[in-house]
Image 1: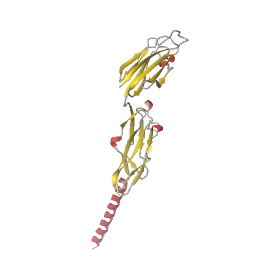
Image 2: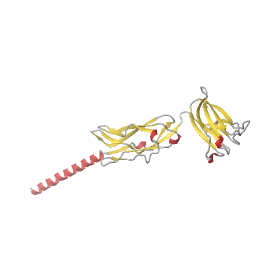
Image 3: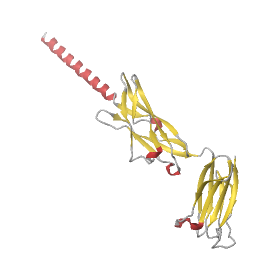
Image 4: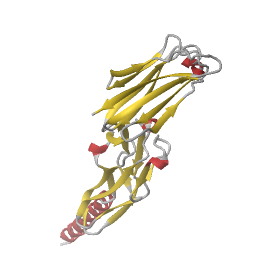
Length: 254
């Protein structure tokens, strides 16, 4: 009888220990969260001047009968995308009751050539009760939905005399871009390229030489996806040193 009593106590203790161990495991697993793995390292295509919204998905590794809200943070040390180029819809994600999935979103805008290839890195801050998976890195890729145009100017030894203007001639003569003079020492005897994303229409380019002796041995081309569609030269004026000179060309985009 005594042996039976001792065995009963030991069995009850083992059952209690097992029950507590399972409860601890369930509580811990309820607090593990991670971003959707397929999004990590994903490239988000953004057209210059447009916006792009990307859904962010967060998972828990188990379903809970109550809703759970977790924080999301931007890793400012790892992110290379400027803060004015994105907006998080919320700094938290709520996983509804009876689910293990929650979503929020981030909208990208103000993307320029300088942000092409930049990254936004998001993390789930780990605390004493929250365990988190890997950070989420989103890479920004700038693309042109219209015509990818390049203005290529070949300079001489006085690039600081060279400047240019791009006009939209579709409905008049509207200045849409300009550049120069070129003052970098590496700009001497170089081909300097400026890229544009232009819709269908009629366009014109003027390249100026401030001194008026022209661009010796140089000129300029307009390329569409790498293929030359227009070109021009900048010759001397009637009175170099007193009258500037220029060269121009026009092109049509379908």
